[in-house]
Length: 376
Figure 1 (cartoon, rainbow, N blue to C red):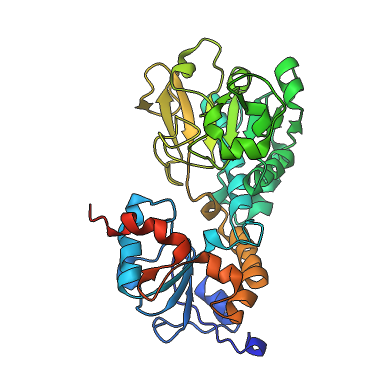
Figure 2 (figure 1 turned 180 degrees about the vertical axis):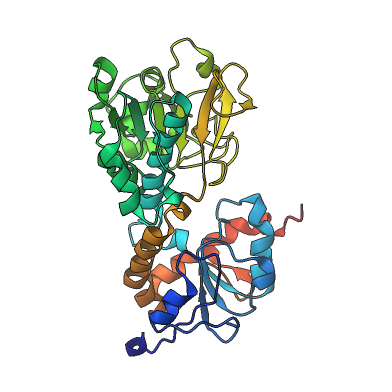
């Protein structure tokens, strides 16, 4: 970074996937005290007690949806007059995100969905991703994987879905059209990818699907996902949920005789009732990745129970594959963010992502005022 006039230091950590010695070998100094740095980069939320006043921070703050558990974090950022740039809001002029972990969330989430199904049925076994050095090691086990003719339905069309598709194909799972998925039987594992027009329709009945109208008026649409829930064994969800849009199914639907889903890998991990999947009642963890939802009561129960639908809803999936995800994230940071950051605070990409500065919310995030000033 010398050619750019930037000095980079790393705060030591015993928990990071890259060892301190790896940074030192690359010529990057380690420093416990980073208070003289102008810009501090992280990934997850910074503990409130570690925030340094009057600095510029870049991390995923998880505040833009008024997440209650991070209200105090944003309050502290304002109190300390910190300039907060949120990775989630770094976008190009079209609104497309320039830096994200979605691909790796999909990659790990699909693997975990199959791991859960293997545990549930006893038909095959997989190692967890976090037990592998990197994706190459995880992928190597697929060479000897003998899957039953499992049927998988995947929703979404963005980075998450791309990662999931990559993983499913690496496992040797064949992709089929939504029509064939519903109409045909297969003697091999298959998956189908659904787009919005496949799982919703206007409440007035079938019509030519208008994606822009659906995004603007999701409350006028109803779910037509049920046929897939009656044909699939595994549901991998990778959509961005809009509260106006319908849920894929209801808890009551699970009690129907034809309901076939045994595993739901909810990569989106929106929490019910504000979620497209009503069984995602809480995040799960890397240590305890699965919980059950009883088909007939809708209540949480032990995973892998006979009358349960097993839910994998880990909300930090890329952490299971930290080396690959970190290198991927770093490349995006260097290519898409650093040049804009060096242009100054008025660079459009940086302005769009700046939530707070000088003790105040910026204009695009003024809607967070009620959230910030609540004390409960």
